[in-house]
Length: 144
Ligand code: TYD
Image 1 (cartoon, helix red, strand yellow):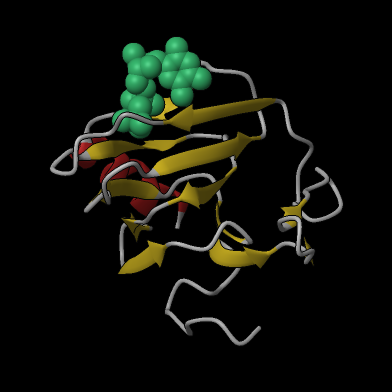
Image 2 (cartoon, protein in one colour):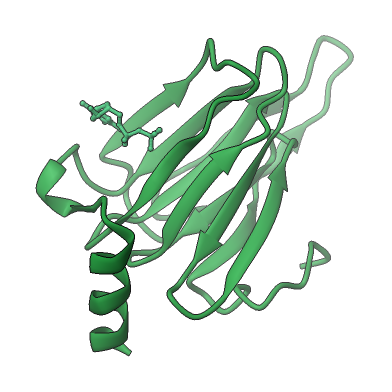
């Protein structure tokens, strides 16, 4: 992969490239769970009408795996496995950021009109969240 080389390009967080069918009528990209992604898609959600100074995320998941795309515009994702933090600027609808379980993520620097789509491995479950950073850190260290 020619994308950014980051400490997190270790399987826990990595960029996923999707196919693009280029056409003068407009480009088309598709994604198949279990083929382009290392999981089957159980849920899709998207963020839109995001104020440019908004900060989202601020949590990790016990089991959930996700791939995050900027379908339009751009934003920054900061990911943290409890040891190392990395930043990714998402701005290409063909390139998603795969985030495995036990990764703290924060999102900010949204461009005007940005649309973020997330493909997730499980349905929504609040019990799967770590919303407290210190609790996440303790669990990440225990897992290491
Ligand atoms: P949250 O995951 O904290 O959003 P973000 O990480 O983008 O800041 O979710 C915000 C709220 O939406 C929270 O009350 C939970 C709810 N929610 C659902 O009900 N279903 C979902 O699939 C998601 C992602 C969130």
